[in-house]
Image 1: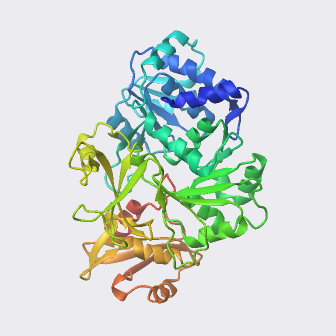
Image 2: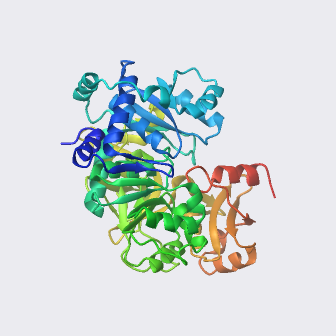
Image 3: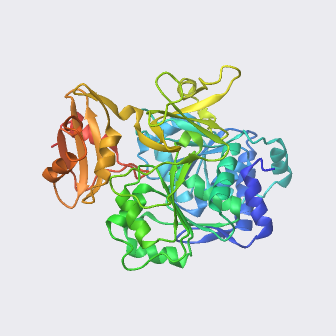
Length: 506
């Protein structure tokens, strides 16, 4: 039985020691090489004599960051990815929240870490990677490990409220990758094309699916995603079979018509999450790659990446909504109405999750944890936690559909409106590249922000009236050549609200 994600790494290392486990644009590392490097790093961390404690890791999209992750795991502590490109104030806020026992970075970034002026011991990869591996110490640590020990703390993007550190244990990640392998048929021939930054939970699926299946993970640079004519040759060069990407990354390729000159030859699966997939983007990819499996994944960070999936098995028109499907095995999805009762068919309620996939909670935030991870209201007999996602959904013909964020439900002109319903209609307009709606409660106006080839307010207004009643149509339309995105590739609603609504930018 698997109790530690390192069991996956070592199992593959015994079977294929010389096989590449991770590769980036500069170099690659084998399974045996990764194990040796991680043990040396883990030995240095373990000499502090602490376990189940946070180690901050300044990450870039490179192999070195992954070596450090595995080293932290060998010490039986948990890693906290801190993105190199985050604003310094954001990094300091994360460090203040987590209070790490160490911060590890590469030597070339040491000056930057020191400039943060945060009181923490700083170690560089270069000074600890040559530490002699202490096999006796590591074996003793491993013997005492249990699968509910934390593996990582991932800080949320903060699209709603204050960002919080989601603490996830080994058992939840093991459950995730086992279900992925069973549902999608991963094996040791797979090559995962990693698109997500390591401080974004989408990357967890790449990293640990690779280890679980004895596969290979190749990092796809952000530059390639923005330039499809470089992207597709790279996918073919590396013989990448699986993309587990954010919707926004797939949308960029579709918007640039990036599959016209060359097609990926080895792709078997394209899996997407993070935002609602516009049907027009999905249809573009499916038309070009009809033999590929397309999977819509749903789930917040707090339930270890994903709790439902839908394998696309038919054509969808731009007027339709893509289901988020059914729960993964060993996971239960409940849609609860305002009376905390199971919602009926087509009745909207909050999506709640039960099972091994639940995170341990928010690190050092007891109040927020108690609010989101709470007793199952359908079980009065014994303690049983569920996670309340804050997402609204509905069941239709036994399939689950995402409707909107609970926070996006507004009362406007005497009507209760789901902003997500408006956005779903907008996603079907092929002349819009991206769009979102934000409500200004003070002025009682719905703002619609959009990215397109040119300003087209009148066309949008006319087309919306064919789908929505007048009271649901936005009151103000704002054309932006390039909508701002947060670090995870989602539309930065907070920035739009601050610039265009709070500060009145025209």
